[in-house]
Amino acid sequence: MNHERQAIIAQITALIPRYVLACYPTPLLLARRLTAALGSPTIWFKRDDLISFGLGGNKVRGLEVLLADALAQKASRLVTGAGVQSNHVRATAAVAAHAGLACTAVYWGKPPAHIDGNYRVTKMLGSDIFFTQDNDRESVDSHILQVADTLRQQGENPYSIPRGGASALGALGHILAVFELYQQCVSVNLQPDAIVFAVGSGGTYAGWLCGTKLLNLPWRLECYSVSREPEQVSIQVARLATEAAQLLQLDWQFSAADAPVHGGFIGAGYGIPSTEAAAAIRLVGRNEGLLLDPTYTGKAMAGLLDDLANEQFSEYQNIVFLHTGGEPAFFAGNGDWLNN
Ligand SMILES: *Cc1c(COP(=O)(O)O)cnc(C)c1O
Image 1: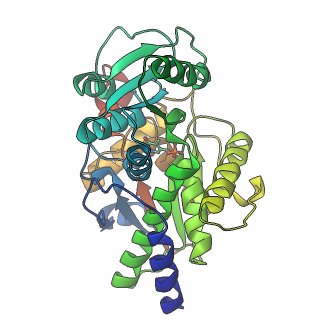
Image 2: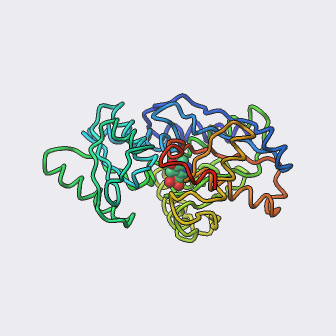
């Protein structure tokens, strides 16, 4: 089995052109004190927050593939968007700067009163900034296309990346993350029963679905939505996974049922810290000296803790929590939420 998997890894990796920006693998860390505190399955952290480029996080993995494509198309600029505290936009700005490309960040709404967290970093990196003046998050989608059109008329060659980085091409970068974790597990003789992570726009989950299927791995993917209703996320993830498989010449059709998503931990809304996430962040911080973020990983951890407490995962012996990054958002705003 191992030989077959190694052959698939070699074959698929060769099909995914990327511009490598960071040092891999990211660490796989045993959370000894957290596990003892919970008296639960053994918990491990896959430290993608430590990706050694642009303040890290999962978005860099997708962007390495997108940048290779942008450079092959001789792009002059990257255009993408999301909310002002977006990790994806911050990472894109860093990637553009590194590759000598211009960058335009399209944000929904109006300029915020405070320039902090990811927004401060993105501005420092020199991105051109555009606000849609519309609080609907979807307003970003049409404006990315409009901004790119205008640039094209001005003689530029813009490369558009969908909101939040959710593209099939980007998902290929996360397939490589599955390969990476699998290799690490082999080397420490670990057989995780489940991989747990936060889902936003779905590109990460799409890649993990494809990668897990490619290697026929026995682990479950337990994903917690931090923005949309689970049903909506499942549809989007299935679409992205199907498209990503097509890019690898695989005739796979994923349905929403293949991409189950846990709901119930979004709190008051995307990007709004929840009491449960604050408690999860404190627990992990005080037991492991490890920082989770209030928008993504804190909410996914709150979901995991709740499901562990309710014995939803009692059949699991080893759980890997994918730390997808996002720490800059911890430093946005006044932090009042943390002590509530
Ligand atoms: C974007 C993001 C996610 C979710 O990834 P998607 O591919 O959008 O689902 C999780 N954690 C962090 C820190 C992120 O920035």
